[in-house]
Amino acid sequence: MRYLCRVDILPHMNINDHTDWLEIDLGAFKRNIAKMSEITGKPVMAVIKANGYGHGLAEIARAALYGGAAICGVARVEEAFRIRRKGIHGKMLVMGGAMTDHIPFALAEDISLTISDPVTARTFSQEAVRLGGKIHVHAKIDSGMNRLGVPAEQGVEFMKLLKTLPGLQVDGVFTHFARADEVNAGTTEQQLGRFNTFLTELKQVGLVPPQVHAANSAASLFFPAARFDMVRPGIALFGINPAEDAILPEGFSPVLQWKTRLISIKDVPPGCGVSYGHRYTTTKTERIGVIAVGYADGFRRVDGNRVLIRGKYAPVLGSICMDQCMVSLDDIPEAQLEDEVVLIGSQDNRKITAEMIAHSWGTIAYEVVCGLTARLPRIYRDD
Ligand SMILES: *Cc1c(COP(=O)(O)O)cnc(C)c1O
Image 1 (tube, helix red, strand yellow):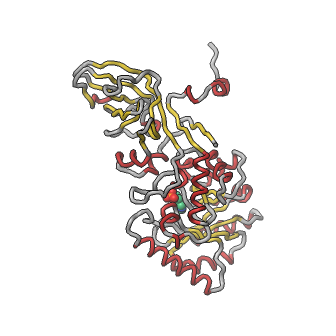
Image 2 (tube, helix red, strand yellow):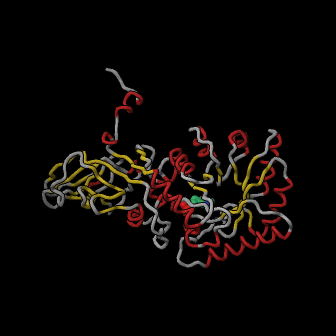
């Protein structure tokens, strides 16, 4: 018996060979970037952390840069490393925590790091000097998120310190909003106020602020005063609403579709338990389909899921397994083996969006797409 390795198999596969996959429209992603810069009139930092919000890291990074993003924002140094290893040389900022050990990489690959406190500032400065280089950094100011950053009231002191430290080149200063996706603007205005006070004080002491950025997707769209020198959206670029109350304007479209196939169909007699735990029991002879998607792909093991088959909604029955789950085909007699099944996307004129799934799971759409696991083949089109 001869085993084929992946490289033997993959060239012969096409989209029809997968039983469970994502279709990602890079053209739509790029149009969303263009829409964002048209609306805001500012350069866009495309935030593509967490595997490009589940859409694939390197492909999304490349599309962002070709699509006009001024810079890519990631959360981890490791993400920047993976992008560079794919031969992508565009500007990049790591917005999360970096460690001293990352500095040689940041220097060699021209990756900008975020500095969120004076201790890190001093350590990074020493390490950069020891290595004989200068690292590009953005200073993080905490205006009320209470996550990363120096409290806004200590911001000027922090910027003065950064200026005195050798080995650091401060290219940017930024903050992040906690509630820009909510109808009530109070907190965002408060944060903006604190941040603006800091910027004013900075100018008063004669320091020219480097590039200033603050706005995530919701703030970019709904708080023009938060746009500063550059906007910093993530979720909107994937065509997904930041929240149920923060709906994208016309002109943005979803980038991702999630599909699987019917891999088995059978009639199950009345009174039979279905799937692990027999949490569903048939009440009559029921036509039940098996689809090739499970919690190991990012489908959540909760009640109330449904999928689209032949343009109709099919409820999921019983527990979702790791690699499969069962759906009711009683109302879809025309369904056949190998039929395409949609988890996110549209079929005929019905659709299931990441937002609808998030609503049914009691979470946010970010978590739905970021939870799409590595096993899913990601098929890209770019037109
Ligand atoms: C994730 C993130 C963003 C993008 O937020 P969206 O809500 O996806 O637009 C911007 N800035 C920082 C610091 C982030 O962590």
